[in-house]
Image (cartoon, rainbow, N blue to C red; front, side, top):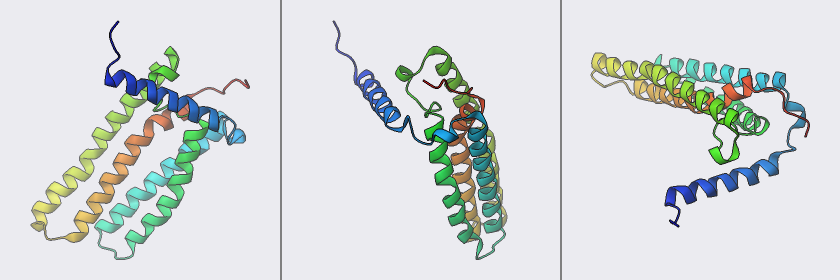
Length: 176
């Protein structure tokens, strides 16, 4: 009998930790576990991401007070994200050992969509930074800050999108 590899042991550990956390949060936010409530959280996250994108554009415009708007965006983002993760059972990033075949297929599809969206959206800050640096000879500090916020926004969107898709499409859970 061969000994499990380090990756196998890590996946087993990750599955155990996931199941332990799932048991801990199984009864948290019971009123938010319906599809309609999960969709409210997804829409709230989408609005927050749009707000973050607007903040990055305002920073690109050179408005000195615009970076302060990132704080309210974070104040909105963190509770919405945590609540969505809890009520969706973290099915967007769960290890395979904790999911059935349908959930694995759903998770993998959502992850693929998240990656595609991330790759497409990342072109916006990349072109902004490339062409902007060329036009300004790299002398505009607002451009670097705004580009960083754009990149951060796109990465948050891509990282959250699988959970958002699963939270939006997952049917109502059995009361068990």
